[in-house]
Length: 145
Image (cartoon, rainbow, N blue to C red; front, side, top):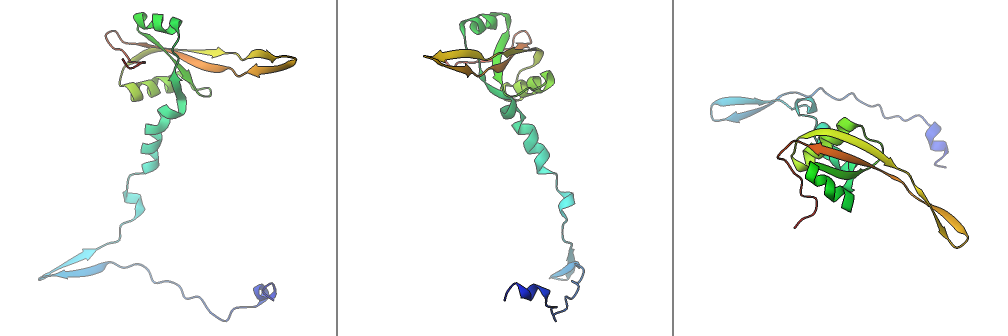
C-alpha cells in the first residue's frame, strides 16, 4: 500500500523557517554580536588544489635512456607525459615539481609498435615525451645518487 500513499495529501503544513539572526553573547558588561559566517568569505580551496595537482596529471616519469643521459650535458631533460598537454602546461608542471626555470619545451609523439607472439599480432602502446631545456646553471637530479 506504500505505492498509493504518494497520492494522499499530507495534512501537515510546512512552516517557513525563520531567517537567521545574529546571536548575542554577554561578556562582563560588554555585549558581543556574533554573525554567522557565510562560505563566500572563505577562499575557494578547489583552485589551490587544482594548481598544486597539475604537475601530477601531466608528468608521468623521467625518460632515462643513454640518449637522454647525453642530453643532460646540454641542460636538456626528457620526461614522459600523459595525454596531450600543451607546452605551457608542461613548463608549469616542471617548474612546480623541481623548482627550476624552463626556457624551452619540445614535444615528441612516439608511435606504437607492432609486436608478434607466434601467429598473434598485437600493438605496443605509444607515448608522448617532452624535452625540457633549463636555464644555464640549473639542473634536475633525475636519478638519485
